[in-house]
Length: 95
Image (cartoon, rainbow, N blue to C red; front, side):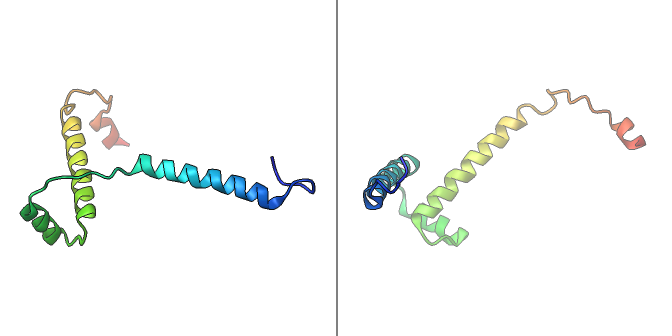
């Protein structure tokens, strides 16, 4: 319900801003997860040094992203030569 002459704008804003704040909180909680990990300090320090990443959180996030990407590439490699794309190189060269 939008504010009108009959509605108090402050009440409308208070109600909807509160809902907005609660939704943001729950969305944040679902996107990010606080986790306690036992990691070798030497590994973390070396990763931070060779990547020039200054925070442990960012270096772990980067490592996870790289691991996921590498595993996806491995999955694609399993399909190499097994999928017929219907491409004729000789016909394409004639164009």
